[in-house]
Image (cartoon, rainbow, N blue to C red; front, side, top):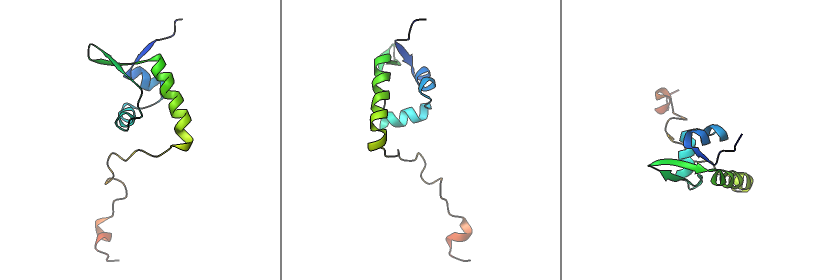
Length: 87
């Protein structure tokens, strides 16, 4: 069987167990894989996927910083009863 030379976004996400949303967050943070387009459809080459994986592995320990939450207000909500300070 011949090794694939390029992946669609869906194939890449499946192969690396990354959700599309997380991939887009990584791209916005400048940490996504290099892509190219054919007829406006994005692809990730095998070389770019390997380079991205090496970059993620190399920087995982020393450069780890969590991405910002999508909806920071959704977690840690305070109940309306405790907002006024009445116990």
